[in-house]
Image (cartoon, rainbow, N blue to C red; front, side):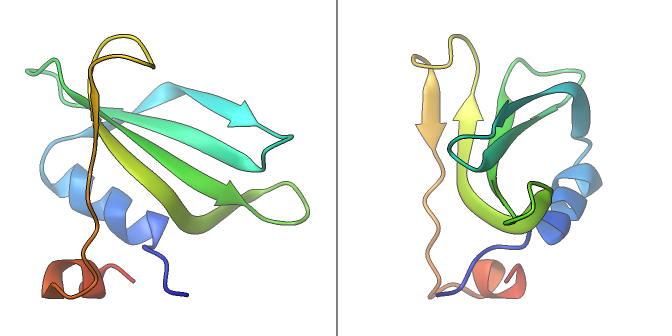
Length: 92
């Protein structure tokens, strides 16, 4: 199975002016971490869920990407990853 690389996607977001926020959500029992990226001029953010490795450290494989703002349950849209497109293939 192919996964999107967190480091490559982070570099992509930073090139468009998004900044990694200080807060993150760690779900140790479920083995993933949620990172938040925001742009100073806009309300929308990116929430990126990244798998943790077996020893409990952050991994490099993205589980899901969400865009939006507001409550964690309302106002967020899932970003569809289509591996047939060159953009997503370059981020593997």
